Length: 301
Image 1 (cartoon, rainbow, N blue to C red):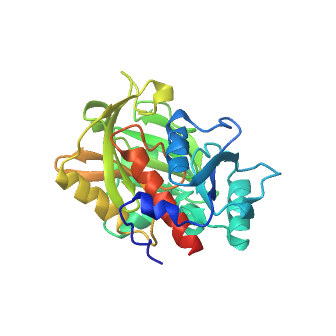
Image 2 (image 1 turned 30 degrees about the vertical axis):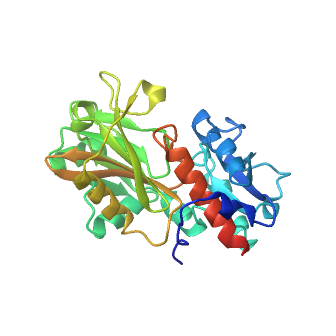
């Protein structure tokens, strides 16, 4: 089902709404009041007639059917409790709760094996050796087989570099067990940085460039990574849009993370569940708020 047509907001749009809409911005116990970035949405949504409030996804007292819409935001522990999180998603779906991003996309995106499917659809990703459930392999054997100098080892269900390690061919051998992925280390992440291109309502909004701390490979700020506002050129935006165009279904928000390597866009992640959206840049907060408000409006007309 395509997203509703997103018309420009005007004061007259707001006045005919029958009542204030109720919206849940979903977070987790480690950040019960949302991140600073996500909280930017609340006053802007209020001005659009939407009462938005943070709710923890595992709150036993939450009445999810009381909300006109539920928007996933800071669910940063889902990878630690994947079975519980996906069971909660299924409960919302079964009860007919309006969830963004939609439940089928959330389930698909929760396991990094989605990258395998995107590669089959023509999207370029780093060289990756996939380990299935219970499969065991020598990391050195993988490095030698593919002539890689180093590789990044990570679980297929992971977020914020959880259990993600860089392994060199010179290190002692290690046996790893699946489900997991052994991915060729792309050194350009340390020199050129990783791009994050943000799409709101399926349309490109803004971009940032992320660099790891000296001697590290992880671009996340909790590991010393640095985020810089950066303007992606039209070629890069088109490449990221092509990634988004391969998935099944519309998105309220999406973040396409990748490297611009020798003129080729290499996809690292397609984030559809809980990515930081850098809403403080430009008019991003207003853009996302208006798209949320328009979705709420269409749910009730």
